[in-house]
Image (cartoon, rainbow, N blue to C red; front, side):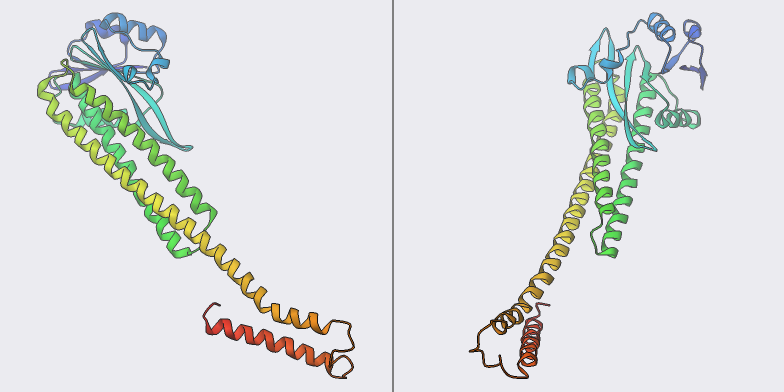
Length: 314
């Protein structure tokens, strides 16, 4: 599907028929969402551009993420979306040529839908595709900020659960690990956009009067990176707290077994002595010898228990 946004007076209108590209004036943005091969070739021919292949779009090398060719800015950036399965990264290819913004992506995206909605209600006058790009980036940064804020609330809830339960549970550790993974994915996409926008900022094809607004976006990205670092440090702290609780539980169990082992050592020794089959034992022939040995074992256990209590070891 191809969406063509163009300016007619002060209004922004949309066209979905790629065959109308040659007849439309003041085109601002051409958005290609999972286009057919025919639609892609039509846009490339009419606009004299060339889109990268899906394999090239997902390349991680810097030379593939941003480059300039034939007066065209080419940038590939990863966007984040939340699905039922969790956080998912999807690539977006961005081109700017002669003031027209081209975006190439697969599947639907809330970021693009929000951008279109803002574009319709905005009082701003969009002069070129550069303004559309800035609006798209600002919308994406706002979305990333919302995701970070949601993660921060989830981290606070986990911290409260951990303090309330005061016991280490496997579910809490799994939640912490999942949030660490989500934070790393989000941070990865933010750093990716920072790298791409830094390249655009240095471009001679990007209007000078729009670079200040781009710098503001980069400052917002830096703030989000600091926020994500803070969230990650909180998760590490919670993970360390969780492991500390596990160690306390294990130490408590070992302590209990150790105390009981030591308490039963004197009775075991007494039982071993009185259980020797020698006639020299003074109680071997006494009618109360058995009961005396039991009393002696009980007194030794009570004495050890009292000693541990007095030392506050139990």
